Amino acid sequence: MTPAVFPYKPGLELELHRHTPPDPFGSHNMIPYGRCTERLWNVYCNAPDYWDENRIQFALEYPPIETKPPVAKGGRLTMTAKFVVHRVIEQSQRSSGGPTLLEGKFYRDRRFVRNAMAKVYDGVFYSVEGGYGYGYDAGHPDPMIQADLDYSIESAAYEDIQTAGHCGSFTPQYYGSWTFSLETNEDGVTGTRQVRMILLEKVEGAQTMAEVIRKASTKQEVSWYSGSDGWVLDRERLPPVKDRLKVLKNLLEAWDRIWWDAKVSHYHLSPEDVLIRQDNTVAIINFEQATVYSWVERWGEPGDMQAYPDHPRYAKDAPSLQPNPLCLHWPFVRCSWPCRSPLVSAACWSHLPPIRKSRWWQWIPEDWVDNPELAAIWLLETFKSADPNIYGPLPDSFLNSSEQKGRDLIKLLENLGRKKSTSI
Image (cartoon, rainbow, N blue to C red):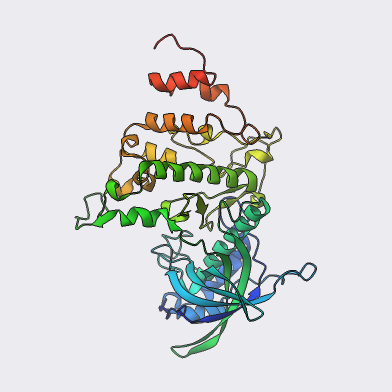
């Protein structure tokens, strides 16, 4: 498709109206693409020059999904507002297109309310290259639907996290879902199109873990077959180990509480998705690929195989307390479903070439990379006294697993209830 001029420049004023997102669809057992297949078919049938079509023209012909307008409860819901763009943080969070992140000022009734972040789901700036895949890398035959998919999932995730009481702590504050009109006059194409967005807290003084790592790295020229992306990390330029471990502890706790209390799994967490505050607490962001379990479609009998297993809180014998972080992040377990722990990723894939390693290995202490037992010892020391009002007891299957080999590690586990060993 013919590229469009990027409109989100400093000084742009967006008149916002409250908007009800579509139900989340198209990912991880949530409502499938099925309801959109007729539209996707029409895209191909009615646009013979699809790959040459102007992106703006396509957006006007295939607008975002319409929903019923939100209802103000007791007159307390702000229905209109204004957002003034200050700067563009991220034009696309992925090389193949995606949401746009803006920093700006939020106004209500012509009065300044707060600095905020706007995440804009504008399908005009999503990838269509590759055509037939539904992922970011493959592009999408209808980028407007892909933008709606991201919008529907991320807004649903924040709604559930907010209901669980974790917005403002484990994530930025969530200020709702909105829509705005964008006037277009480009290459002879004129019209007004609707664009969806969500509004989030601007976490003052915070930076992503990826930014911290990049500032401690140097770009070098490398050959394409070297197994490196060209960025060489200097660990001496990272924050002190004790600060990095405090961040890691806070991250694991935040991830666990969001998964258990809000029933939301981030699914593809990376250092780009972790905001580090000045006090080393964290806020997790970018939930557009999350699994929102309150919307997961369920079928069959308990125990039936599904592409994405259900949340344990929906089981007939659901536990009253969430699993201990030791069970969820134990670094000897290659598949840590349902949480896909960064600690597990760092430990399990450290043997791969740099470009294929999990990004988390750059944050953990260097001696952990080749010795996951050190990560396990840290986990035990950190979470052995986890709040019993929040976390369940360690199961025998965990304590007596044969995966634990080292003398120091087994001794620590014996202190927690592992059967005494006579072989060490």
